[in-house]
Image (cartoon, rainbow, N blue to C red; front, side, top):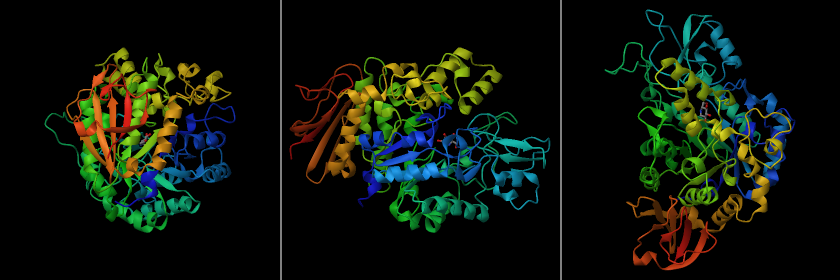
Length: 560
Ligand code: NOJ
């Protein structure tokens, strides 16, 4: 397996709107990020992934782009961005930009042209279809943000496709001119010195020929039905990615990660095997569905370690020889990991460290989401009006309209799964609004900022922050963490995730207790010959190796 920078790196995701405000308008901005670069350097990360900062009307917080080559007014301007890039580079940190090219904003100049007439040269930059015989939408696909995936546009009497909000029309990748325009735009950023790209829902760019209606016996006429089978990992997606790679990506020394909902291990190999020249890694979502019921994300269902481990294990084994894993337990679209997979009450610090140990000792590239490194938790806003996310509001409206679920039940699901859990502002200090802004924050700060914040984390040598620092630093000195083979132990254990990582004659043992009770790991004798504890979340090694305290994480070097 080739040794490369991006396998060795640790990535830190910044959601700019919520990171640090510098001008008191309540919205995080680029100058705010610049003011926190020393903090990132202290943490020791290698790459910053910046969620979108391009011009946008913010229907979906920047994932709806109206100008790909300029900066959103609230965030600053191109000069600020240049300063951010050089500030990162001076500290040895690379910058990965977010590339949102499955769709644009409906306020993009291309869409304004496209919708203006059927003959407009930009018409075919988007996906337009006439309605059915009774004026109904062209097919029964639903939007990922609820409701139909089609919007009727009065100007020409045709529908356009939007897999996300109606202000995010899908781009038509079948059109070579559109592809050329996108490649030119990407080149603009790479020429400026960008070091990496995270590609938003990149496996949705190729839609099946004819955009077929989902046919299923249980569907009433006109009933909406997902449609993912017709646009996830679609027929030309690999051809398009190889073309983009050939024409643009391969000309630069960059890191790439594709967001690929619905991708299987087999799909991921196609996207990331080195000889296929597409991407370097993908964000898969299987483990993010471990607590989803038959009705999807909002149908919140208890998860088990067996379920989570089975998925992570499958991906570890599946990409052992070809491709590469990205490792994450939360991001700007997911609840906070300590609330979801750990314990955000009495064991918050221990369980956040235990999950961090998992992320940094599985094989793959770890991605840390802002605030994770201080153990930030989910938030429970009491009223819907406190939430800002379009996905949450659309879902609420649809469910109330359908009338089969009660307000309280929906609110509970929002508390567990809503994306605003991750988007509450970064908690820097005990100052008002957590030191995020002098103004009124666009989304309320989690009230627990008075005890969970960066200032306290920096001052406490036992904090989650300092544990992350240690893990990140270890990775720099121990190639076994990056390149070691993974092998699962105790596959049946209800609460312990245990595995080894082996590189030549070096072997590490990782033991993780996912419960608030002591747990015993019955290990074979060869794995009991411990040479040293590399890292652990309890001050002292356990006197009885194999007996794990609540949420204990311990990594040992084994005797050769
Ligand atoms: C995935 C992004 O991560 C999410 O935040 C966004 O809403 C959708 N793609 C649409 O761009």
